[in-house]
Image (cartoon, rainbow, N blue to C red; front, side):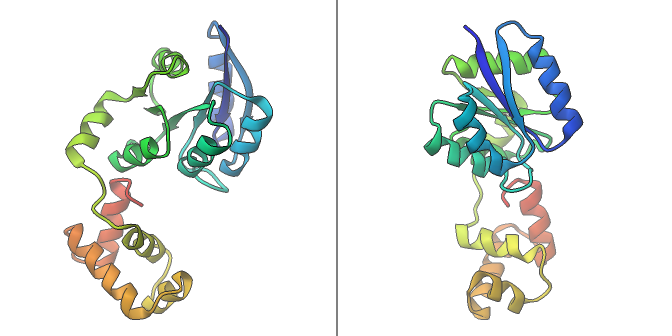
Length: 202
């Protein structure tokens, strides 16, 4: 059985190296590659890969959102997230988005190949150390709205800016920020953003 693979990775050198290495594996056929998250669904519709390897941080949309859209648009394509960021929150989000695998970019090619085969056969392949960390960390305590407010706060200086962008009142923004800061055990908004980013909750 030949396993058809699509790569989605914005770093050209890494994408090319991965394609070359995977093409050397028996039974693998790298049928396409894209550099943007918003190109993933179209490429999978065109190439019909068995497995799509998705980075998380890409232009357009991130790999988690691409995985969610793939689950609806091309459900037969199984997703493996391959990322630099081994954050427990990202693993939770990836599994919720329908991913069947989650590996770190420095995973040896032999392990990556084994994971692709396992996922193609209907199994799951998750980095063991990250799985343990995710279990001990638990899910994000933030509500979807608290997450949105905190994520928007990364690039804005004032409550009014955040309120305008999210179409909320300033008082509502303050309430959500206060709740998020308290839940994360932070002292400031900036510290809350840093904690949530580190855990992969934004």
